[in-house]
Image (tube, rainbow, N blue to C red):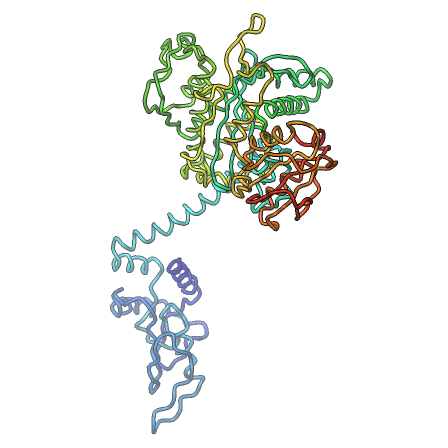
Length: 580
């Protein structure tokens, strides 16, 4: 670029300085030439060509006045000292030389008539002759580089505008997770499990499919921002539940029923109807799994297919051949949807792989396992350096999501989430199923003429499921502090300490002792912090759970709390005020 400026500067100055050299000692600035000057100038041209023959080296060639000392190029301009015995040269007589030395053209005011300046074309030819292929390469590299930079700026700007437009179209905001913050303060965490970031992932058929609003894919993606791990928990679509309104049915219909009920009340409020459906299914999933839901993502088949294609397909380690005659007509009349082993799937095959369910006695249980397998593969591909650092792929993903995805993530939340997910590696994603041996917490059954899935412990009994999920998705702050907790029953209610201790264990607390307090007349639950405030997250969770009075000393000297970090003395209020 520096060379480019130098060349341009020379060309501009030569266009101004068009005088031919004059005889020594005569002024260059003269009146109009007399008649016949053209002939004299024409007569000079052969001698001018003979002086340099176009082989003069490039650069400055100052001609110093008689008696002046040679000055290196770039040295400060100053009047030369006079030679001994010689009169000092007047400043005015040196002016021509100084001006010459300051010009890049190499011409000299008051110089010889046998010199002339090269034209821009002649200089380029001289440099090309001297530099050969390297000069040509450098010239075109410079021009190509400028074009490339311009293209990057234009394309990057376009993608940036498009990405922002798509981001705001997809990311509507509304959800919240305190754990998205860096160095989150304990008081911002509402309760156990809030130290994670839980997404409810819903897949529906969408327009053009039977039951377009039935959420046949229900997954919870749970992220531990502290330890940079994640887990996928799938819920069978046929799980029989009692909905928010009291009616019973399959969990995959909760969203659709709530949405249609809202539309019946307000036919013009489509957005509000979608929100009503999303809130209803999120509440039901919290009831089943016992964990908070911070965000939701609702995606239809088209978005899933295009997302897989946008990242160039996904690699799935298929555990066994997937053969489904009921879907052969969609697969070119080929019943084999996937072969055992590592299989690179495009969007169409990936969608067929997660939709198939008539393949074994386990039916929908196997399908939920394949869904987790595919989502893991897609997550790894999206989080790979080749995708999330590629603006074109990000733009393609957002284009695929634009009209087919709904989420309550905000733009700021998504940026913070991206910063967390870049450190979550594929091997750190755990797959959790409710019917995967030995964890058989659900089974198939019949209600009326409908084939459904029920909790093994009994209809609407989710205690075992919740204990399993909470301990698997343990709150990272509870796990990190690993506080020893002692639970004492300070009431006359039998078994209260034991029941409470089991509940705390389900959240991952380290309950070291369950016993009765020396007295049973405690009206209010007391939380005793014996750590001196060194385990603030556990203290925050326990205090909020029991709405407890905080103390730093045991209220009764007879209580044995050796090795405990916290002592919970249950009062009468614990029977009604404690959280679920």
